[in-house]
Length: 457
Image (cartoon, rainbow, N blue to C red; front, side, top):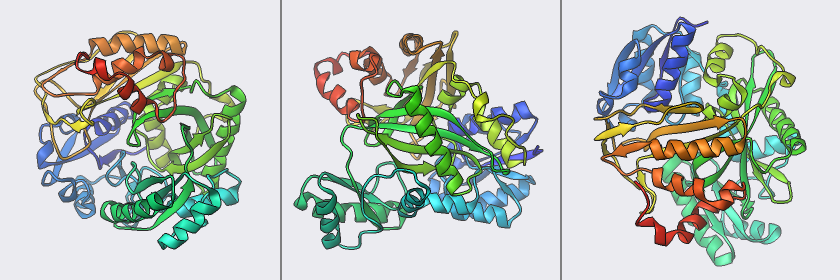
């Protein structure tokens, strides 16, 4: 096991990694920007090194400064967390070249899954179902029109690089496709420095199902079940749960095998997530693989009892998985609500600022992962996540009832948050019955317009 690692991240995920390291007896070095001097991860790490100004492009995205901090801190490995450089193949290559262990997959695997066009082709050859679409990049609007007319509208134009809904446009006819094609290319160039796009059939009202996988260096691969991530706004997840109310045991087994096949196709090592779209008729399609730990990993941890971050550290240090697929049991139900500093009733406008008062819920079956505290200022430079509230129990109803109670106990004053929206979700009869798709949030906000002004904050 490692003696000392550097955490190339900030906030909640950095705190999460520090906690796992402390339990394993690993010393930690935090990096931070000048805008994060008061962030909790800086206070909890054994050492902390400032790497630049507040904007991420001047700090958390500076590979040379992170590597310099790793050399000053004399660490053996770097954990990238999620976001920033976590899925940057060049960063992983630099770590490898500096003889610093990258706590994640190889640079080759990141590269293979980072290009979504290449990933589609890899999955197709491996026998994993993919959404019908273009065979490769679409280089002109004429080619785009040919593909769309062949597979039929609606279609979606997607950036070959990146994610988070950027560089993505849905088209229902020829004129909207031409407009969307150019808009997607321009947005992809701005966001990722790569204007390459491709086209897929647009699956209307699907469920977004992802499978957590773990793989060691000996070729052992397991999945830890699924997470239903269908509750989204602008392709950004808001609430996740496991198990999905949409999956039967037979479908879970089938999708789990496909996820393992996807990981094996790129000789994947460490933790990763294989994402699928699920049709109402039970058909499913690979959409991408996230080559990092996910924001929503605690959901799976509470359902399976497996500490995913600790497993990342063990695998990176050379240990084998200590279990097979048959040993993994799904004994609980868990839900995670992302509490973001945003106004959900004003277009999810960001709401950075000082937290005047913070009270987090507790009690049996309640977990809160956060870097925030009373008096802490949410900076405007980074992700708006304030906390992750995870509730779990013996079944879905218990988890939902516990989440409703915990949301009522959660108090954040000084900034606007997504708490009132989560309260609406947990009270909605369709959510309670497990009847929802990726269009649920938009429909909920429209249907509950009269209640918005009186929603609890």
